[in-house]
Image (cartoon, rainbow over all chains, first blue to last red; front, side):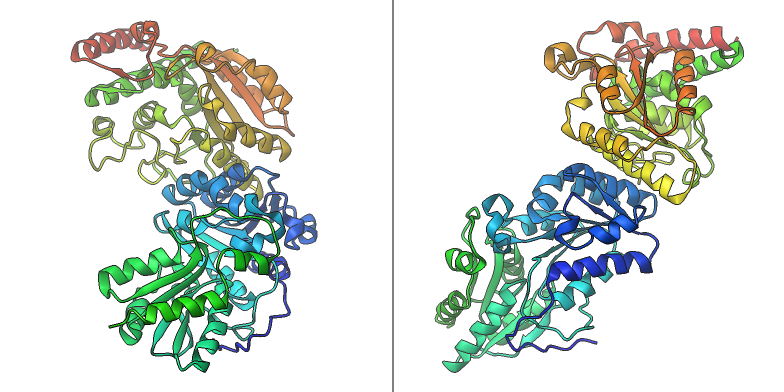
Amino acid sequence: MMKVVYTGEMDPRLCKSVLGETIPALAEKDADVIYLDADLMSCIGTAKWAKANPGRAINCGIAEANMVGVACGLASAGFKPIVHTFGPFASRRCYDQAFLSGGYAKNDVTIIGTDPGVTATMNGGTHMPFEDVALYRALPGATVIDVTDPTMLISVLGQCVNRPGVKYIRVGRKQYAKVYEEGSDLPIGKAVTLREGSDIAIFACGIMVHEAMQAAGTLAAEGIQAAVIDMFTIKPLDVEAVEAWAKKCGAVLVAENHNKFGGLWSAVSEVLAQKRPVPAGYVAVEDEFGEVGPQGYLQERFGLTAAHIVEQAKSIIAKKS
Amino acid sequence: MMEAAKKKELQALAVRIRMAALEAIHSLGSGHLGGAMSIADVLAVLYGKEMKYNAADPKWPERDKLVCSKGHAGPAVYGTLAVKGFFPYEELKTLNRPGTRLPSHCDRNKTPGVDMTTGSLGQGTSLACGMALGEKLRGRDARVFLIVGDGESNEGQVWEALAFASAKKLDNLVVLLDWNKRQLDGWTEDVYPMGDYVAKLEAFGFDTVKVNGNDVEAVADALERTRQAAGKPHAVILDTVKGAGIQEVADTAMNHSLPVSDEQFERWTAQLKSELAALEG
């Protein structure tokens, strides 16, 4: 079952609370699921459950490289580890361990990186990964997901624990706009059409899905019909969806809360270049480091708003012959 | 004290491991000979006495596991596994050949009997901790033996893992630190002095002993001890010689990776064979 219920309203659930409920629920359902954290259990609401279940939840201290290695060792003993820390430490800090002890050694692990991109807000530039997707895309066989809303978070986490390879899930801890009806299944690797359109196809992921939907509304008022496609699975990319929408609309825009190098824009461009070259562009971070501030300010600062999408969409459509 | 016959048996196994590793490396022309030779004796004690395993069923879940975190010593591990019948001895000559099951660094998905993939130095230490924790959570009494190089311990991940092992009281983990005193660029004291390993491991909360790592009886006694103390992880600092067992290799200052000529191979093999004859004769 999957139903799109987007109205622009926020989902009342905080993603940190959803993580705090979903991780214990998965562990209670499957005795092989084991949860590891690097001293950030209290940030996602798992601390109380972890204390009561010391054999199911391992606090590895502030040592992320070791944590991922330990998770991989547990995987070799038949466990299904879920590892959590903030995005930069779940990617850059432990990348070699995820790559070799995980991917290369065929130890299957699920890694959750919270507060991706501008959602790191007040923790600032040191905690603001704009490159985590690029890193994990380059890991052979990896699954890379930028979560759209709490319902999707529950759905993909449940799939990831039983999926082979290294799975990287990036998700903010706060609220997201509600996109999917509670209980919806979002199969990994399958893009979701959120809004039909014929003038341009907007592929978005993470917090940019909401911005894209807002932009599509603005464009419609000006007579431009923009399709919006939720590309929450950045790897393996739904190549057929990219091809089909490029063919239908003849113009493509990608919106992502990530560096323009190596993320969804790169992934979509690779498909377009090979399969169906059409005018295309992006709304993404212009190869910069992050900085501190509220999310609204940061989205303006790095050009990640609905207004930026509207402007880009018009400029791409103007290139259609 | 070990029975004289058992001691001879383990000494002979160590010689066989050296011959096998030498044969593999010679078949290729060169390789990580020094660090393979330094751990031949501990491998002989592990696979000749201490570890429980089944060569006919390498993935038997109840087995003890070995993580050779200094993954470049793969040829010594392969030599041990070949001698113990995990795969045909002749296969040693496929080391590093295209499509081989015996890559330069240990790979759990390729070689029967290799329990963990290693090679990027330091990573085997955390993997071993996860494996040891997994054994405990599974309720199995299997142990995990972790061979770490002294040069390898330059890597920060080693110390993260040791802290974890101590914090989680992994008393089914035995760290075997191959203190062979040389790394790729030369003597560790010149390249990157790491200080006193016994003091360091003790400070990290390990039950720690230092022994002559090229003496099978001393190593066996130390491993016997690791069966007893509970509540903390174990460390055995193996005082070894890089290149031990082949004097010319031990005497070569830069012996991390060496070419092996046909003439050297014949001569060294003849020496090892005569040692073997003396032990088994």
